[in-house]
Length: 168
Image 1 (cartoon, rainbow, N blue to C red):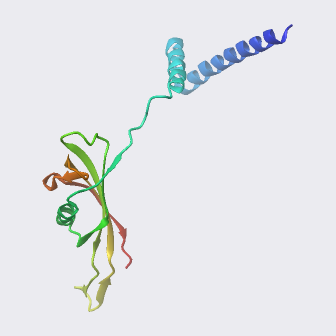
Image 2: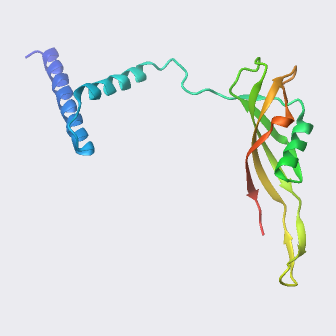
């Protein structure tokens, strides 16, 4: 037998054993008889998705420059109850095109609460808490500006506020 015929026969037998294993494992896992049309269609969809790699699968966020950082920081302070926002960590990202009239942005920032001290109500001990650092995430609407985006502070909605550091 020629070498080419051996290779073709090997591939045919490999395909047959692969399909038989697929049908057997489907029967074992689902405890139902396999539907050959659905299994073959599933395989073809998987192969076609592997071959179609030139289309982007995940949208990337655009980092945007915030024009009105002070207003946004004050609004975040008021809505979260922190004492301050680190302006260097204040950033906005969006999946939308910057040329749109209204842009939905995700805002992230680091906030802090100053150290607190006082006496406990039950005992006469003095309680001192160190500075607390918070990670703040919010969403808002923004409009394009010349150097970035201007965030509408009335539309800011806090999505999460987590303590990063609180050592007692």
